[in-house]
Image 1 (cartoon, one colour):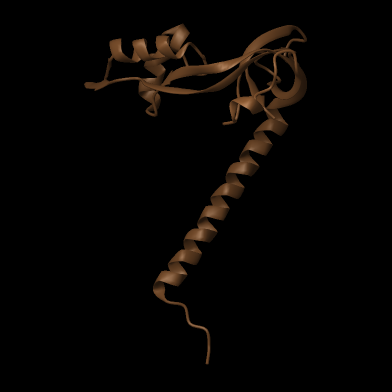
Image 2 (cartoon, helix red, strand yellow):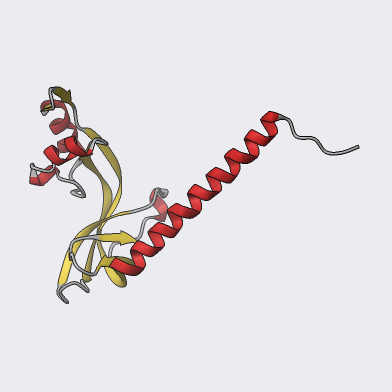
Length: 157
């Protein structure tokens, strides 16, 4: 009387181990990136709301969208403006037509002293998906990660 695994059982175990491995790698790479390129600083929340970004998963297409400074990567804008841009701007890249995608979420405008240049800056900070009641309040001081070389790049801690 022994314990036997079916092919499906072994497959489920393998999938679980692979998923845990990917999650561990993802966490470790983010931690190393923060350790090498970011410094934790305090920031004052100036404004909180929902904003959108124009983006595309294809890097070549994204590079074309990045030529529009107000719609470039990491730029947060009013969702109505992002939707209007997406509807009215289709790009031809390598003979294919691409429509930009709009991604929205909670964003806080924060003011902080950048470790990159020692000056005060304001930047949008993408917040994790939270209920509206859990957003930081205007005027609150929160900890963020500020990039050590590029003053406008910040991430939630």
